[in-house]
Amino acid sequence: MSFPFNIYLLAFLSSSLASVACVPLWRKWCYKTGLVDDPGHRKIHETPIALAGGLAVMTAIVLPLAVGLAGLFVASQLDDAGRDDFLHNPILQDLAGLNARTVELLGYGINRRAGQLAAILLGAMAMVILGWLDDRHELSAALKFSGQFFIAALVAAAGVRITLFVQSLFFSYAITILWILTLTNALNFMDNMNGLCAGLGAIGSWCFAWSAAVHGQYLVVLIALLASGALLGFLPFNFPKATVFLGDAGSHLVGYLLAVLAILPHFYSKEDPNAWAVLSPLLILAVPLGDLVWVVILRWRSGRPVYIGDTNHLSHRLVKRGWSRSEAVLLIWLLGAALGALSFL
Image (cartoon, rainbow, N blue to C red):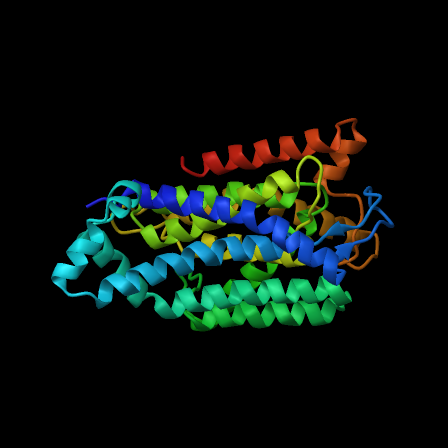
């Protein structure tokens, strides 16, 4: 059977609404605790802005997920008659389209992937904490990189790994850790204009969701839609005028989620044996990856540390050519969406 579309829609809408509700609460907390981005060098805002984005997006992903898991647990503890009554609740029937077969599928998938799902969730929370510490204390590049490496290694150890048809455990670990580190820092670099990082994250997550949906990988779809919905709900607070920033907590989370979502779907299968399909994530993530490579090369050639920010990013170059900041962000979103659409071909 095909997985109910209503559940996909419910995941997306619930995380979007949770994000809209959470941002003001976390913004207030950030102002109260002093977790703000003060005006200064290379910054255009004139007043402190709350660094609440990462906390709000993470909360908006976890809340619907926790409610869904609690509902599945309740259903699993009921006898057959009780389960029938539970599933025939009009809200569950009409809103979510739940039935016994769907609950069985979800329960089987979650039990089978429980270790990996837990590692992914813990890794996401760890990335938010690492970014929050950087927002608060401005960690050294070495300490921040070590934290990213540890989190990436945890995810790889849980079995969320890239193989690329190479039968080597060492290679699988190495390429997976490198991939997560690369995407985490690529999106951190892209967080240089209002809405840019969050918008690319929402677009990328959406593309990974429907790529997984095509292959019936419903758990991957649900995770991707939760991420996309949470980022979309955050965007009105961040673009075009920002009252909240993602901060390093948010950009770390976005990069990590996109890296993991690129690993989870099975782009290659025996039923559809197109080996080139494994390159689809490179198209979906071409904009942040291309920007990362470009600025790293420029910094390396000029003899500057690659982790020191500058104004050589694609967004900055568009502004230098006369585009407004909002126009530059919209153009980059469009480019990311177009390349993501090409990945389906």
